[in-house]
Length: 229
Image (cartoon, rainbow, N blue to C red; front, side):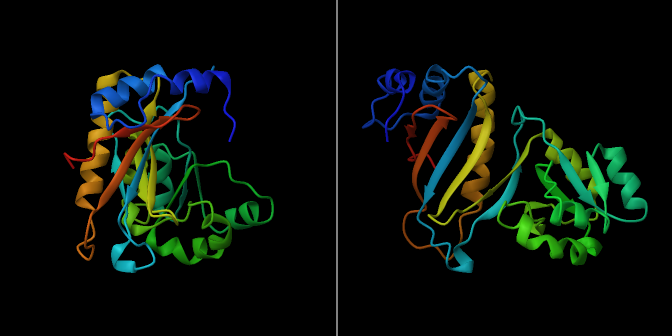
């Protein structure tokens, strides 16, 4: 894969053979963010899990203390007084049955997270083929299937992110923006790592965290030393 001049220059600042401690990795990642927009800082965690086995799956959510720097649009499926509760909590869209054709037929997907009360999952389930592949299906483990819609919406707006294994058993998550102060990125990173370490499946034998890489949207990866985790 051919990279542009900026990427190549940025890559020269990084020693590919070095495992950096987190503070140095964050400083480097900020230095190598050269795009004209405020790049997202991402963490890629390669695990020793085998996601094909249910007992080795990792999935959950964590609230980043300093948010993600992104405005997140929340859609809530609810009925009765839960509709008013979701609106009062600041959900961007709230509805029920009437949203199904809009999403299914018109391809409306102007939201980043979907929350549903348990009694609405029968309705939401009909959108599985649309929401599933996009990772938007509400899930109790991620706290997005709940009667406490106020907490769910507040947490998401405050910077709650979901993590899960992809097909290659890697977790990819944003931990902020390149414009964040280093200390804020460090706090977000620590909160994420604490959640990931806690989520270690008890069925896993062998090494859990194989590698951790920090990068920005357009920048090269910086390897983080996994020893302390």
